[in-house]
Length: 304
Image 1: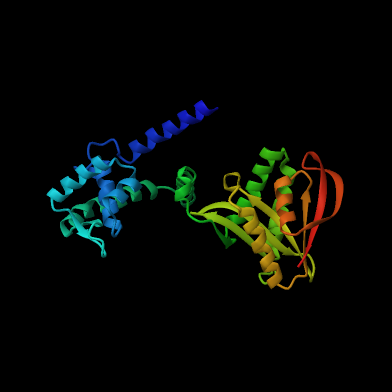
Image 2: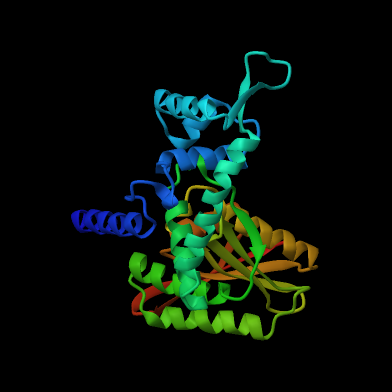
């Protein structure tokens, strides 16, 4: 399995480097290498960056970067200046001549991306951009990860909620499409009968990638129901489940509910642990056969 995945990744690398012209003698029809263009790009778009910081962020050998900068200084494209009160701290910036040299590269890069994306239909274009964002997110070092934000739902989110519940619960618990159908029914009812003052959906997101969700819906005038808590496998261990539940309960209190209830299954240990830590307690259980499995349903409640 891993060997096939490695070959698929290498095949994609070969395709994309050829597609964007990385193998050409000069990038973007210029006399510059890919690395040289990338260094110029960083200097054009960042203020107050030092050589050591630039080498670290680009993953370049300091000696290699030093030779590139030496060539740029010889052409009067780069200047070094002292910043602040520390005379030992030098920062780099493109000179006016350097910006004139870089400007055609910026325009060509824009034209290249336009030529690649413009022929695609809108949905195809979004699918390509989503795939790029996923690659960037999943392969980024952990220390470089952006913070996770919680936001209200918007078009496209509900379909994702249904799809990911179906896929994850089938893969991790073997539940069949009947569970996905139930999630679709709950999500559709939420959208069709939404009362924004008393009901809400939260989507957890990082750099445009959805990582989790939770819903709060009205059961009656004084009782709210927590529904459809989900955390993507790669986001587990970040405290995201607790954040989603806390946001849900805070909203329930503000909306004037007196208690929150939920329905879960006895084998969902991670979710049950989160509910218990939040103060929920079981109020009943019942054996049933659903989603292709013999299960024990549990009801939980929390007084606010």
